[in-house]
Length: 409
Ligand code: GLV
Ligand code: MN
Ligand code: MN
Image (cartoon, rainbow, N blue to C red):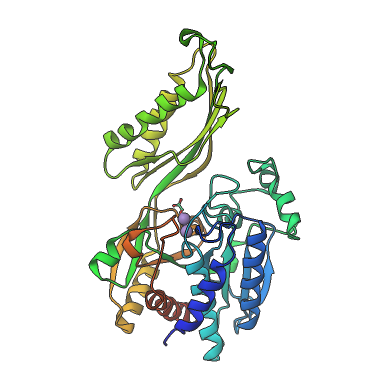
């Protein structure tokens, strides 16, 4: 079954307009005005394709096509629709659009599945507003309890429930989903790396996903005048932070086997050119395909941070996210590969260095994740780009796989 490339392109273009930084990539923070615009668009399309639409207590969007068997668990297809700051048009939306297109193909072919088909569009996968990341899927799985969610705040101290209410979402709704209501989850995502393009292969069938953690580090020192405080009387939080940060790459390199560390977020207080900084807050993202390496690096980073404590320099480390590396379901991987073969679409088995909602949902259901090529391997930047025929190939593989999973007992 051929996917409709015009429809796919229309959706990608429409969603790309919902950005807070036009001309400078997609910036779509969770529960922002742009979230609301994208949300309304996705809900409209879901209705157009005959799906019953609902949102949960985190604002994850579900569109359901009932199965012949009303009580049967659903095959869910989709991804997230938030973005990083100044990101691209495809990280997340490509998978949501894939879900929409699978639903459109079910409708066009008048398929009445035995098991329900659900399209999902999840919130806050990137953690760009509330930190940590994978928030939508962690809520669905039950890793974030209601009380915990109520405590999560953005950098302006706006809580998740308050931010939700600002766009008329209802935080009192249930978030955790009974695993018995899910048969499988399928996600299409852009590769975000160069392999598929270089090898001229259409689809990556993902076998495993990297283990990852995020640390939020606060260094507190003492503010003072930049001109009158002698160098030996300073407790400069930024100098301590800079020393720590400069040592992180070496820790990752020494750990080896592809272990990586990144400091992507950094704030200085009070942020005046002639004031000695009294507080610095930064993130440390640590990833490795082996959990042992993630754990080793966490310990080394924490020890390093503590080693900079003095009477006037204090440190705290919080850990808003920890995910073990995941191996994805073998049977679904086989069905995805068989679908590629049947459709004559070239494929490769791959490992994912990026985190995905699929890794969270794999704790409660059988999960399949496929990649489609990324131009020049670029992602998390405005240049992120995937050709529409490549997206269509991925959609066709998902459609075939969803057909099989919604029919089979
Ligand atoms: C999501 O893009 C992640 O890998 O952090
Ligand atoms: Mn991303
Ligand atoms: Mn993503």
